[in-house]
Length: 107
Image (tube, helix red, strand yellow):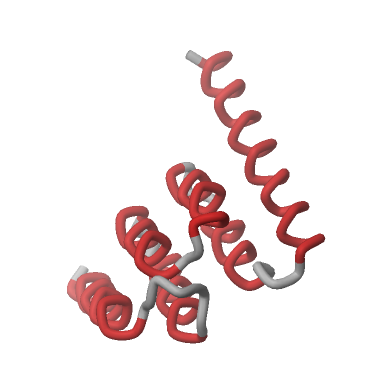
């Protein structure tokens, strides 16, 4: 547990120190990678809101909210590849919709 708290503290420091509002950069990707490894939704959302561009934030936040950390990281990495970004954004929507349908059917 102490290791997880140390990782979260390191990620938070990295985000607050290096993340900028002018877009995805190396430090943002590194912080996002570290945050997703500890599976902390709030930390991932912090990284996204502090460091990602507005047009990608909604897809990334939706993925993070649903625990789809691999998709969050992929969206971050592929932002500059328009086709990949569009495909991943559609995938996030599809997966979230399917998860909602599954949860509705189960309950």
